[in-house]
Length: 54
Image (cartoon, rainbow, N blue to C red; front, top):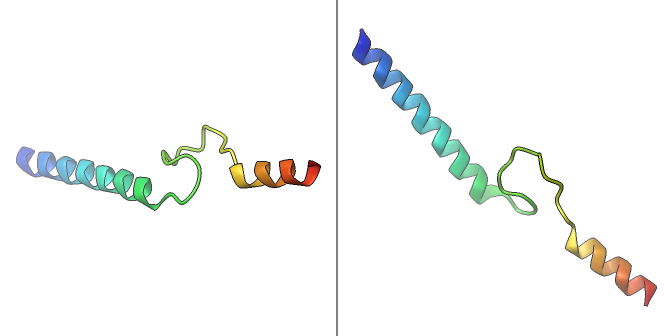
């Protein structure tokens, strides 16, 4: 029974790591962590605003 529990926890850990790696490579813009704690900077928007002022 203990072995089954350890195998189950190991599979859960592998699934979690696979999800983190998948999210890292699927991020198109901004932060790749996926936690939402940092604000992303839209460089294209800033460049457009600078171009409009000039």
